Image (cartoon, rainbow, N blue to C red):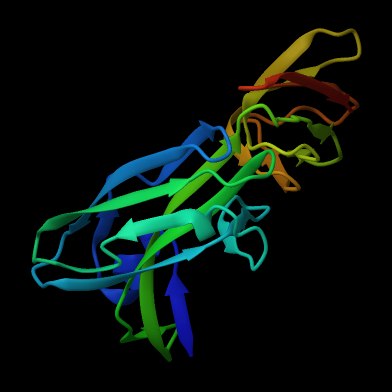
Length: 240
């Protein structure tokens, strides 16, 4: 069995590596055909050298916010060049990598993941022997200037101790949302405020989050007002 570890916190646990990136994401707003370049620094925290290779993949964000590779939407990846495409990090050392490209034609926000992968190595997970290939990724978002069509749907409310919120992005741009949900009694008096930490939502994406108050409210019917904000404006929704 082969396992690719996408998330940095999995790497030392599963595959005995210690890789870090100076930048884990970049969000660019460019005109189609406009060139760009970025420099990343990779660091090796172990006392042995680590060989890395580079691959590019389009991705989406799952309902838990984690990146999921997808075969669709490779416009940005097709116009990227990573130099070098293979490298060896010295023990406790670092190296710079240059990411450059040209914004593709199209509209809205397009995304590409630059993945740095180490060589496969044996490991175990839950008593099962695996071949592990640890990876660490840099997420690149390119929004094509003048083509933005932001939109958001939000549904809030439900039964139980936690407050469910369902967010959908039918627009064509990345929405990086934050805000709060206010819980009111029947007379409209505020009882508590639940903050919503920053949450990314790609075009076509769906996210479900549950906010838990520190202290439970007595059983009853409450009004909830959700206020969200992103670079494209403010949004509001109500529920019970």
